[in-house]
Length: 289
Image (cartoon, rainbow, N blue to C red; front, side, top):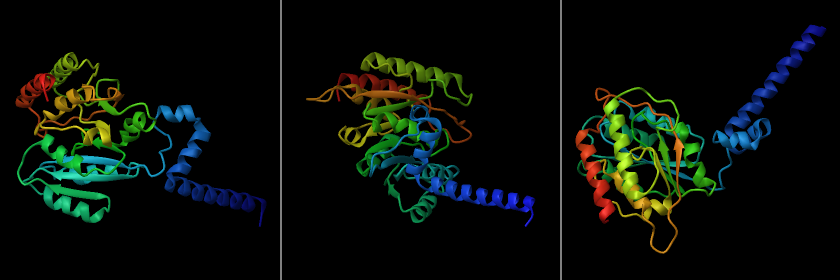
């Protein structure tokens, strides 16, 4: 074997060894974190949501679903590839398109997917109430069934809770991440409703209407919810802000998130009626439960 052939052999062997190592690191989340900590440092990793999870940790992802045949399968795939032990709880709000068939396929394909069917169409809030009852994870996150919100951001969203700094986390679309440019008046309505909510709750949130709300399981399962539609957002915010009887207030954090909103032609459902309902709920749940 010539010198050139020996050099090529050494390079090929080293490349194979590196590929074996990379495969191992990719398949072992804890090993991947240890390697990245050595390469980047623990502080830099924490800044981008790379940190060890407690032994036995599980995330519950609650997904209300209504007529989402176009988006659903890909959304579930995106949730599944997030490297966090998880269960997916999908609540079908009496869909009239091909969504029920897709849900049945997903439940058969993934052993961590559970599907629950509402007998009638009641709305997002009612679907979430049903989903929260079935959560068994340490932390619960709300995920819409479309592609507006990116599950790849789960690690950063749950980080304040995992690290013991928070009980509840809101993902904010208005704290500096990339966002699709869409409806001006939707943005105005969101900010007005958030401001009004803050006035009643004495919180300083930037995005009360966000989908991404994350809770310690004991928190969300200990709150009595009533709103059936999008009134869930101001209701849960008001009840999180209210000091629990006999204990300190819940610790609330906000984390920047990206947002890829969709148009009404693409299936967006929230409208002006829901804005007025949210306004009603802000006042209603400030006055009394």
